[in-house]
Image 1 (cartoon, rainbow, N blue to C red):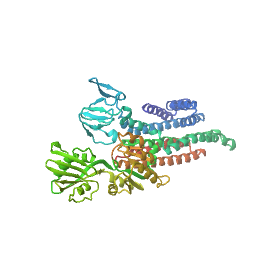
Image 2 (tube, helix red, strand yellow):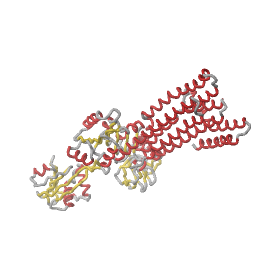
Image 3 (cartoon, rainbow, N blue to C red):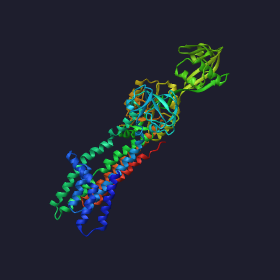
Image 4 (cartoon, rainbow, N blue to C red):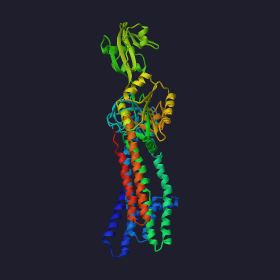
Length: 614
């Protein structure tokens, strides 16, 4: 880009020098103009000849070459140089615009690791990440990128995950925790056991996704490509007719006048504004999305997202945390801490997720010597002897079976009733926690003209409806198996308008069939999940549902800019084409209609990058 800029500056100086000084010797003036032209236009001439040899005749390089050589042939030296000069200024501006939009993706592309420190034969070896095998031990020092997915064996540190997730706060990790390739180790030295080869790692999957995003074109981009393919030869034929026919049939019409008009017609006809700005708008949209942790697999999905009418959510792991947690401890006749302790001791030998959540909430060392015996009562709960106390932990059926006088709770979730020595001691409520921004997301979707929000879940009716009511979701379907979710989405697809789209948001692991069925599949929190990256069209790289609103706003903004550019460019082109044909406009107006409109359209396209992470 720097080389092109220097050529433009030198050419512009020569061009202005020839115009301002204006030597009386026409030969010297023309020589300066030609020198200026060759400096700035040689690459265009070369490209035009190369493309003609390949059979690609009708492109912007061909139009610029014919128009400027034609202008030289009728003695319009200044205009010939001006056309090429301003065209190259437009191209420079385009390069700058593309470079600016690429920078929004460049941070993401920087996640590619350069090397891995592997422990082999008692020493560290620096090797390519592709050469590291599963179960090998790698060492990552502060400041280095984590090259492969794995589990921390030794050490603790903080990780910069911004390039992957858009999250600015560092993440703390310690022994036993999973780490993802592409994140940056900020503080301590850690040893990692590799769990995935490089080709299957998070960083590899994401890089592949981003690099291939441009291959999936939107309908708008395909329209412009087809439009340019047919439009360019048509205008060349019209320009030839315009140069030859009028002087033959109109009295006193001169060939030079009509050739000039035809050349102006050719210059203005170049569809650069459309060909450049439309893909640039989509590229900028995809880049802007990646900057805030949203990966969009292609501009076609970005365009479809703007037409979304129905958003369907999976519940667990999407709108809720997907982790059972103790939400409430209600003791009767004892201290809250004592009720939690007795329950944790009783549940000590169980591996059930509910037992794990109780032990996590207790968060103290359990003295197993105090647990004299435990017995699981199928479908009821647990009976245990803890020191000298007989403890019952379970559901209503257990309380009724053991004839415990208890008070039934109306809370929504899993309720563990506890009795000590035959006396009711209270209950513990365990439930899946709703994500912090889920309610805000549903409200924002409705503000963005989403006609219907739906939630699908395999949970019981009272649990599902409770979550839906808290969030303000329009419809909820509960107790669904995977095939039931597919059936519901098939029915919902029939409810949208012809042009409307349905987006399904799931965790990308259990919901792959529905993600594939929906018009737009969005994997929520799918980072590190192969199923999410492969099945979804869009991957939200964090667990924040609000990013869906960001994505929809971005898609609508992108499509608005695309439509503005199409309408503006075609209107100006048609207007100046008509003026050129009737000889009202000169080649200067033609240059504006080509390069000027391109620059304005490109500047407009760059507005799409202004989206902020809300």
